[in-house]
Image (cartoon, rainbow, N blue to C red):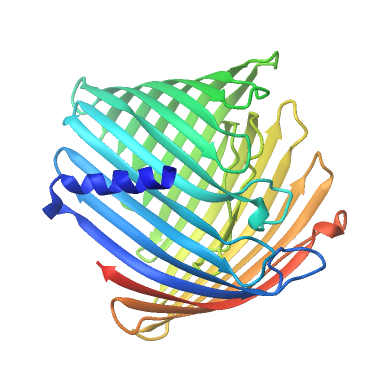
Amino acid sequence: MRRFLTATSLLLLTTNAVQALDISLGIRNESTHTDNTARTADNEVDEWVHTPGAEFFIEHQTQRLVVNGNYEYEKRIRSEDLFEDESVLTGTSNLTWHILPGRLDFTVANARTETTAQAQLAQNPDNQQVSMSTRAGPTLRFKTRGADEFQLQFLYTDERNEAEETDATRETATAAYVWNPGNNDRVTFSALNNTVDFEDDLAPDYKGYTTSVQWERFGPSIDFRALAGYTAVERDLGRDDVSNTDAQLGLAWRMTPTMTLSLDAARDLRDRSATLELGVIDFGTNTQIDSELNEVFINTRAALTWDMRLWDNRIVLGVTYDDEDYDDVFNDIERRALQFTFERRLSPRFDLLLAGFVGEENFIDAGTEFDRLSYEIALRYNPNRRLSMLFGAAHDERESDLVPDQNYEENTYGVTLQYMLLE
């Protein structure tokens, strides 16, 4: 039913100024062979997984309405009976209605992602779920002096997860003053009230209060962002209140027209883990997220990325760090990772893609540590503007001396065909 409602909402958007719409529709089929479909330490099972699917993109913008959406549907058909066939719909969409342009907006947004339900277990079909988040609410703006602005916003968010009891609703009210001291600077003072109601009766609902000030500077070669704030959380069910001094830092340095160095770092209070990407190209990409808890934690995270284009080559290097420090449950986690991507245009119709990932996951309270290694190679062939073919192979492994029964190695290879019906 939720998939039907999402598709229906996208179709309804076409009733407004159809001639201004930008729509693309593509169909594809991916056939992949794996030598360890369950990602187990032993009893490895080979199988082919055939994945027909479609991708739909829509974009529309007028003075009063801004719409964009991108959804992918795929059906996974397995040659063995170890796991059932499944259908998955993922993607994002956003609608902003300028009810009173420059004064009152109303926003509706939806995001569907496929995640791992339990972080310590291997990412196989039994440990995957679709997580959906839908938010809606108005934003009221008042011009004060010059380009300065006072904003009031209310957002209602509904979160749903298929496999785990982590459904929740959120009500977020924000008041902000945006001060523009110069053409290249922006300072935002904000106060936020966040009320979270978990569907699980044993999970502690909470109210969070955050005050912050953020400074942004935009320049021809450097964009800079710094935030300082304070968050206090009041929890139900007799749980202790939690507070934290928040800090965020963002830097994008365009060293040359073809080279960029980016730094993002933060320390704040959260109740959902960030997504950890393992693999950085289409073929074989996988995702892991720890979403089985309804608990607040202090999250310290940082990412440093170097992106360079050299003639027909693109090289991306990334280093990430993520630490989750829980207040009163034993689930502290620390992650480190190094990622590498190389893309080369071999000819107008051929592209070479390489990617590598080396990481470490330390489940501190569980006394478990995993080393992760993933690498991929793919060749993309575009015989014409509408048709593309991707031939690829990948290796993924997880190893721990403490829990060898949770180790695995998996090798995959396959081909993906995609054809654009509309563009």
